[in-house]
Length: 293
Image (cartoon, rainbow, N blue to C red):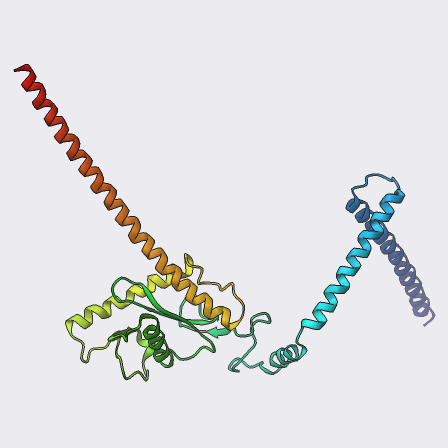
């Protein structure tokens, strides 16, 4: 019993001495780091002291930083909506199950949704769903809108066609959509779903095959038009960004057509110049023959 008590006392004394030693070493290390950082910030080398002018400059800089920090804290306390923060925290604490709806996935973008499109390489995506409407021939974007809340595709078709009618000032006669739009409630436009057999003529089947051309257009808008990540904040920012991406796609297509037209014009002008040069060469040869005769 006495041996165990002595060992225990020895252990306690050793631990207390080592703890005090480590605290002293940490304090010395902190002082050294603070001094080296201060010298590094001022660009002073060695053990040279501060002049009066340098001390005044240090005091002025510290005061300015202190004022900036106080102003920043005041601005945060005034501008932050604490009710919104409490709602976010309550949402984070309440929505714990996998199948719970209206989860909070991002603090700076609360409107972000979890979207599952059945892709093998990317099972879940986080963002906002966007509907794209293009012309069947030409591929120009005539309607594009952001859809908040991850709605079913079939319930968004009427709004997309309404936007197309507003922007183009005419109602589309046919609409060719993929199988995700089954169960739509559109009555005033003939809607053909890919894979359908009933009432599909050869012309309609050809137009339905053209529907798949929208997929590479969406890929170009994601990669070239920066549709993959919105740089504007909020739901209004998402809606504006979607429309701007559609406008950018149309401008790129117009520029490509103008570039092709310019190449054709340059080729035509080159051919005309070659013909004129050949005619001038023939006329010169005729004049030379006349003079020699």
